[in-house]
Every structure is written in C-alpha cells, then in structure tokens.
Image (cartoon, rainbow, N blue to C red; front, side):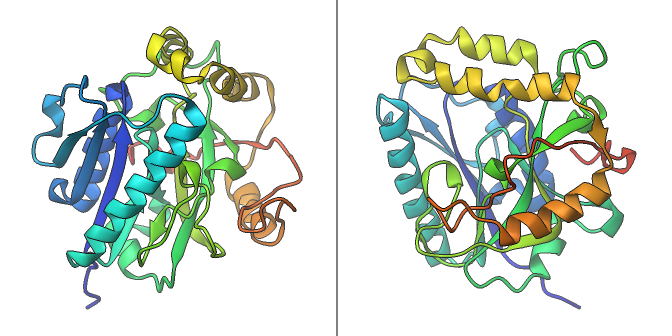
Length: 281
C-alpha cells in the first residue's frame, strides 16, 4: 500500500475570513487541521474561532502598497515553507485564502492520496479555474453550503495555473504564480479553483474595504471582476474537452516575458463545471 506523504498547506490572509473559513474547512478535511499554517497579515487582525486546531499566527503587517507587499508576503511564505520542510514535511502547498486545490472526483481519491502518488521533483501545478457568478441564475455565495453547488461557471485561467505545490525549498514569485529559476508541470485531474471574484456582493465589499483600497488594490479588483461578466455573458463550453486542451496548450505555450509561466493565446474560455464536483468543495 502506498504510504501517505506528510503535506502542509499555508496561507497569509488579511480581512478575508469569508473565504478563510471555507479554506480551513476544506483543507482541514483533506489534509488534517494540524497541517494547516495560517498567518494573519497585521497585528490589528483577530484570529477567528474557526481556526481552532490549526497552526495560526498573527504577523506584523507586510508592506503598504500592493506590489511591495505582495513581494514581501511571498518571501515570507517561501521562508516558512522551507521551515516546514526542515520539520519533516514531504510537500508544502502555498495558496491564497480564496484558492482551493481539488482532485477530480471521478478518480475517487482524496487530495492527500492523489499527491502522495505523484513523483514531484520541484513543483506541481493544478490547472487554474477562475470562478465567476452567472448573474440572473446564481445568487449570493454562502459559506454555509458547498461552493460548487452554488457556482457552476469558470474561466480557464492561466493566472491560476500556479506551481502551488512544492517538494523542496524554493522561491515563489508574487501571488505563487511561478517558482523562481524552475519550470512548472501541470498535473492531470487536479484543479486550483479561485473564488475571489465569484460573487458580486463579496466583490462590492472588497471595493468598500478602505484598507485594500489604500494598498492600491482597486484597479486590480476592477480588472479581475470581469470574470463575473464572462460567466454571465459567454457561452459555457464542455469541461472535460476544454480542460484537456488547456493543459496541453498551457504546457507548451509561454509568454516571452516569463518562460516559466503558462500562456493560452489570451483566449477567454468559460466552462460549465460537471455535477460530479457539486459536493467536493
């Protein structure tokens, strides 16, 4: 019988308890709460009760403006990942609080079982899916219910095909979008599901967050919010066919400015998530 690897997952969050609650629930079930490492960004933050059982810390706020803060955040998390390897972990996952790495349920295995069976040299990338809200069909997102029973449309997004899973100490670039000095490998039947812009109300709350706006997030939020428009207006394509194509495309196509990141000809492909995923997350 294959021995399960020891896997840690870490994140840094600020004013993001809505998604962090689901993050703790999901990764706690898949990997064990004792293997979750959460860093609150800023001593003005209060640790939520749902973090009980995890390894949770309040850290002095990193940076003021979004670009410098993001670089500092990923330096910090890369260092923390290296510490976790020194404590005996086989793999470390780095994701934001609104990102969930999911195995296709057709395989019938848990995230731990799936990753334990992978031979990973440096890193492993799930295929990125950026979820939107189909206005007129899907209501407000509730953390009390399965996200995938409430959201059914996602753009296949190169921004979220990230080397989030690492097998040795290395340096993540801003947003976990690359591992510095190394290539990436996209896993089959593994998805990084991003929900940060999957709800109009949550998005409006973020735009009303004075702290985020002061850091310079307004332009970024407006830009990424178009995922809701894509989910609402674009025709949804077959999930299995287009995700298979996207893996091949993103593996071989690279932007000239960053050869260790995936590209997809700037295509905006929306897919409908199969019912088999409904209760996974």
